Image (cartoon, rainbow, N blue to C red):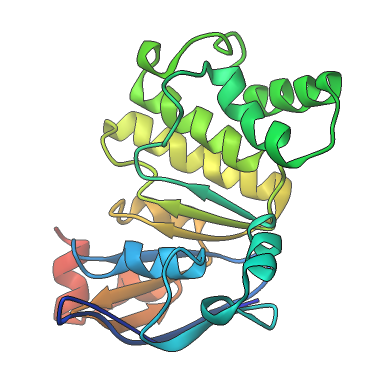
Length: 239
C-alpha cells in the first residue's frame, strides 16, 4: 500500500534522509525508531505530502505523493489521519469542537449526525464527559486522546503517529499505546508510529524500521529486533 523508494532529503546542505526504502502492506502497523534527529519525523511528513523529496519517491496505492497535483493530494489526505506530537488542538475550541472540526469542514453531515459521531469517538478514547473542556483545562494524556479522536473521527485508511507518547509519564504513555492498538483493531488502518517507546511499542506493531545516520539500519519483526546482537540496535534498545 505504501512504498518508500530511495527517499533522500537534505536541509541547508545537511543530508537527513540518504536513500530510505521499505514497503508497508495494507492494514499493517510499523514502528519507525532511531535516535533523535535521525529523520523519522521528516520521513513521516513525506508520507503525508507535507514535504517533497529531493530524490526518490513515496507511493500510496499507485499515487506518487511528491509529484501529485493539488486535487490528487487533497483526495489522498481525505484518507489520512495524522496525530501530531503535541496534539495540535485548537486552544480556542473545546474538546467537542476540536473533534467535530474536520467533519464540519469536509463532510456533508448534519448537526445531529456530527454530534453522534463525535460523541461516539470521544467514548472510544475515554473522554466522555470532557467534551466541553478546553485544551488548557485537561491533562497531557487527555490532549493526546482528544487529538486521536479528531484524527480518527473520519475513519481514515492511513494513520500517522508522530511521537504519540512524548511528554507523558510511563503509565499514561502505555495507555496511549494500548488505545492506538484498540483503535487499529476497530478500524484496521495502515499505520506508522514514530516513537522512542522501545520495547513497549513492540507489542502493538507488525514490523519495525530503524533509521540511523540517515540510512535504514534495520527492518524486521519486533522479535527480530529484540533478539538482535547488532551493537547499534542493542545500544538503542538498552538505552
